[in-house]
Length: 468
Image (cartoon, rainbow, N blue to C red; front, side, top):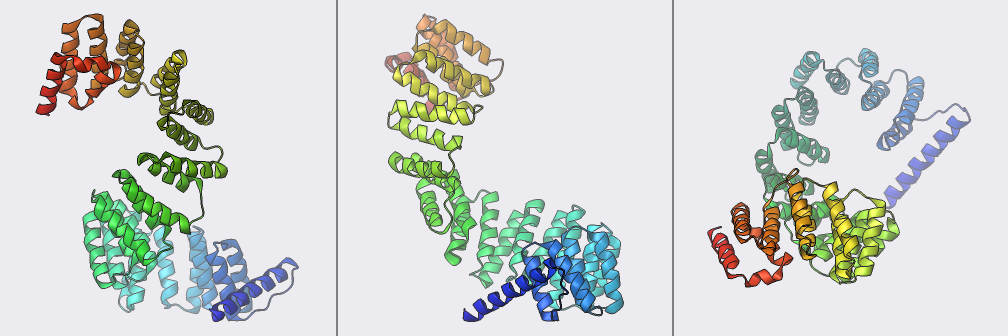
């Protein structure tokens, strides 16, 4: 540790000296080792223009060293300046015509320019004398060629061969995963990473790719277990916690998601997104007090998030604190006025307070924002039926038919007709709705609880639910 601190201090002093000299126009004379350290620093910080300045100074001081031309061509390639890189490579070849690093950069530049035949010729020559580590570099260039020519299966093959050669090279895992996504080779990816894990069980990046592959094929439990191994092995691997939590949320395992999120928040900077996720999990397991605690923390960090206020409104609604719920939903709508759920929930809250005119206005607004969703029409129609406005409800349901269709709309129509005394029409609608989706039958009782006493209706519902 002491050695590392001294090294870092040396590097920072070196950078400071160099930048001070540059700012006052003083001539900078540094050793080759010093120049290499400064160049590496600027590259690692993605300060590529600065890196080029240093390289040019180094090349002026050491004009017969190919390493600075190599560095310059590498930086130019990272800046997507392949043509300029080729000119520098040409100069480097005059100094060292057979050096692997120069030739591989030439192949990379030609690949960027889609000069695949020339690049392939260079790579084939290099294969005859290359070492195992050099072969990985060759495979990476070949993979890039396959990617640019949209031969994604071949791209995957190149990268899988490379990672088998050296499964400790962390950069390869990200490259390989891109190839997996493009080629859709998810099952092959699983087999490959299980093989790697069998040899290198503590490769957290192998577990990470394995988790993503399992997720893509719907093996969510296996995916969650794989993601959990990533941060068991590397406790600071933040995306492992988040990926595991996201999948748990997808399969409605909110308690397990909470476990991962609460572990993650001990390591990560508190941001509003993770606090909102935690609150959402607490809402789903009905711990509203804890949910509000995290939502209020999130508001301090992000006071203009409509999602945070909406979720706060959900908590107050579940606690039947309708005034605070309405206040929270209004705040959410003031920040984002195009989300239909916000209007539905504030409409429900106004209904519970007995403010029926406002309830109707907001429930109606939801249907105009998302007319293709039958749930908002049935919510509004159900409200009108409860208010005794049966003909108005039927008019709304008729309007809904221009945009959408659903068993819920048929159930609403059936209830309205039944209350108007049109029993035959009502039961025909109930039958049609039950054939479409028998699981939504509870909507009938939500609109009119007295219908739970209707024996004929109950018999019909029991028949269709038994059949389903």
